[in-house]
Structure formats: structure tokens, C-alpha cells
Image (cartoon, rainbow, N blue to C red; front, side):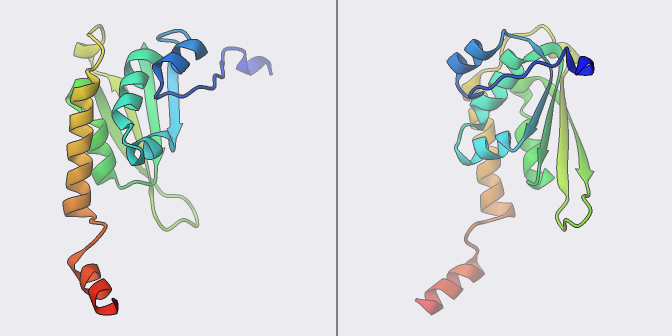
Length: 156
């Protein structure tokens, strides 16, 4: 409709710079809404590339990146708070009716000091994300706890 004339839709692999470049010009997006993209990228060890591409290619200088996720904020906020990305992170818990687990909504805007700066270094972001995710799964939410290991050994 007429009220959506300024909305542009593009389909591409945000983790692939060539795909991204062919889908839209750099700095086009005033708003990027991510529902599940970062979640998948974390699992696929591609979060650094995704975050760098959103920050340096998709977002306009005043653009906003919104991540909606069911991941715990104790993991999500530190992943997104990488200083190399140069943005401010604001987290809000979202309670959905009929859903036990709350969702996280994180809103990122470029920090004033980073508004005209260089693109983020993907290797630096990758080390940051890797360290946060590694610590999370070792200390906060281990996939194999000592109790579960004992259960498995007893059942084996």
C-alpha cells in the first residue's frame, strides 16, 4: 500500500559479503530486524561475520539493529556488546502471553564516537563472540553437567 512505499525488501545471505552487496547498496537500512538470524549464526560460528556485516554494510550511519531472541540476556547482551562493533546495546525483557520463557529484545545504535569510524575487524569480533559463548557454555549453561555425566555413566 501507499503507506509502505519507503520499505524495501531484499533477500540475501547476510553472512556473505558478495550476496549482501548484490542485494542492496551499502548503508541503506535505517532499521534491521533480526528474529532468529543471530541465533542461527551463533550455532554456525558465523556470528562475527553477521554482526560486522550488519554494522558496516547494512546499517545507515544512524541505523538501528533490533535482535529478538529467546536466548538468555546473560549470553545475548555480552555477545552484542563487543567494543569493536562500536554500538550501544539496550536490552528489554519481553513477556509473551502463554509462553513461559521471556524473550529478549536488544536494540543497537552506533555510539557517537563510532559514527564515522572504520568498519569493525571481524577477527576481533570473532574472538570476542567465541570467548563469550565458550564461557557461557562452560560456566553458565553447560551442555554436559557433572550430574548428567554421572547419569549417563550409570546408564551405560
